[in-house]
Length: 331
Image (cartoon, rainbow, N blue to C red; front, side, top):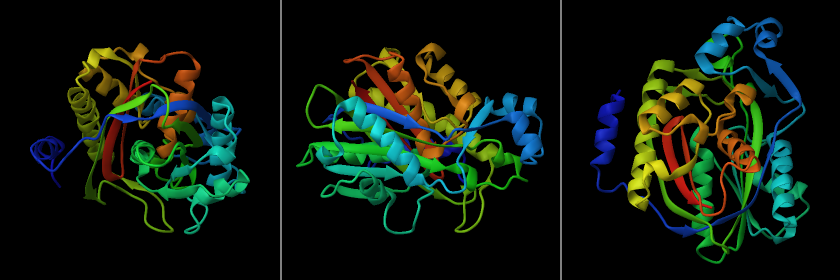
């Protein structure tokens, strides 16, 4: 397996790696939804039989609680709720949406797509709807695809990240079971307005040894390999996008990273010199929600007024694939 440092050197020196931007893409609304079943670390250990302690989980991950969906709840249920909240904030009826993209690793069915099921539940038709699967980099991937569509004949798009991560893990494996929770986040994008994606970059390297979920099975993760990978590509991606967009790193008003582990987030922010008050962190309440983590954190941060029109917002995701990428936004 190629080391993280050698991996990045190879990527950085490969001329075929390109960034994309700027692209007109205004965020009209955001929304998030998580199940009501809150499972704190004490409950995880006692009720779910996790071989750990609440203090160990908190110190190693930064997670204090997470949300678990009920057995009858599907990814499309969570995604629809998040989409409705985003559309309500945007003041837009579902019938005005031209494109639905859902990023998920836990779809309701192999086919049809979860996006089509969301479309059905919103009682609308005619718009294009499809899923993408890129694990924890899924939302930044879907946002990039939607923004490119907005440069053609698409006027509005709803981009959703949703996962029921609690169903992907074995409760006897504390290297995975303590991390994951369930939820969904959504954004409404428009081809009109002053918002832009100034730069976007998506990359992958096939590696099933570090992190995988076989069909019908549960997650296997090499924690050390993922730590080394994430703490390397996270700051490098941010620097690369800032350089391409000619935006100094210290001008980023809000950094929204994938909520994989609070220690990874703090490590990356420290290397970039970005103070934690400018970093969106909610992993202590939701755990790692895979493709949903970035849009949930973005929704909360924007709802709290942590960024305004004209500000620079950086999204960065990384996960199974191995895949990683980011989007530099100007609101």
